[in-house]
Image (tube, rainbow, N blue to C red; front, top):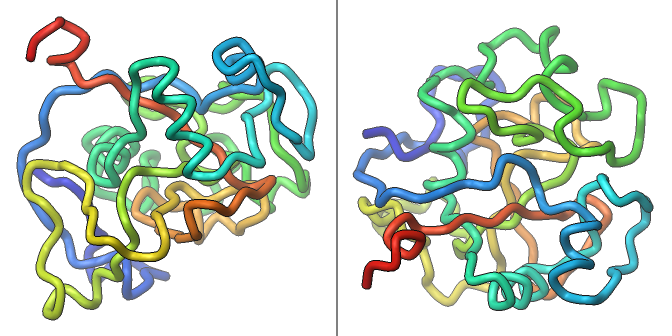
Length: 219
């Protein structure tokens, strides 16, 4: 099945978003929303220095390294890029999980087209077809993978076909989904961003997943 990547014919496609690739994912349970400030505090006992304050707002100012600590507390993990994009697309192949029409974006996600230059409470927009909210805009979402530009596949080879994270010792990690400060063209299902794992920003958040085998107590 399709694991990710943007077709060449998609309008406004960036070079590092393709080509498309296929494989087979292992089953996993995916959080319906990004992690909130309330959830972060309940798990870690700490309050990050959020730029925007609110219990139901996404936690932000968290680095990739911070997310690893949260996951250690909960037994969860960050999704791989393939897992994240599979959940985001929810069976669609269009630029956005609602289609290709930019005029529809504000019904589904928070971007700078809303003229609100800050984060918003989770689950405030229409979810995708599988019930996942805020996968387009609001905050970028850290995933487990190292960042490798897809246009360098000839040099580095393709991503894993089992949907696992691509870990090659690179200096930056992948962020998905775009954020409140981006235009909708940077908030597509296949959009990619990258930053050092120690970096934190008011634009960076995350959601975690649980492998189904682990949920069922299998080894």
